[in-house]
Image (cartoon, rainbow, N blue to C red; front, side, top):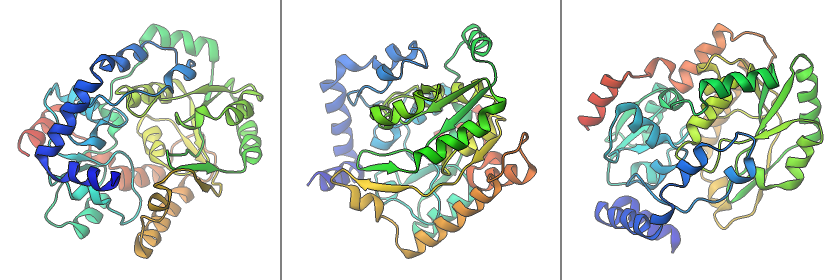
Length: 340
């Protein structure tokens, strides 16, 4: 029933707007929660990961996630909701989520030309807008003085992105092996920051496994925090090198911001913990799974060796999947959005 109702919200503009205003009225007292958290220390992860009641700024539900819609509109100095569905991260393979094409806008904002082609094969009548890595459009969250003080205090920083869970599935990997690799890589660094997704940062055992090694826990915040993308941008810029144990949107973001990245590729198992777990895990058909595996393998191969510099091959890969050459300036972006 819940899935059916959400499908109606996506498809019918009138119902979507009612849904939008209902939550704005119901959660009005929480409208400034993101602003409150804007001033929190990057190390105050326990406060940053607390739930935020849903107070939408965008009509389309997914456009309120990770501060992407907010960052794009702030970049354009636009106040009205976007009439286009935003794919909220990098999707590998030919999977195109149902709610991204079966909503009232009939327009999709995505990263790259290869993603554009996948979407058009499934939905040839959808308008697809490629903008490149969304993090380009986000403001930095840490001011210059704080940034300088943090660099003086923590020196050369290795920023690590572990595989992350979702509401319905819990990511599981060989933590000891990953920690051993982090320790090996971090020998030439002064500090290690572990950037945990907000759901994983609630896992006390996981948090302690990193803290026991002297690593610092940080997070980009709750996914309803409109400064999520800005906080992530500041964390990446604060670092000198980045690594992860699985390919994800963060890889291209790091390269765009001129931070080398290393993938210590590990098998990740997903434990079903929510009612939509089966749907999330099995959302790809065989073709989707094949194309996803091929594309992810290409990225993993390009980043599988620790390197002090970003290679030309890595830049080409990031352009292919994250669309670095699709970045728009303010005037170009405004022209596209206003002509939708």
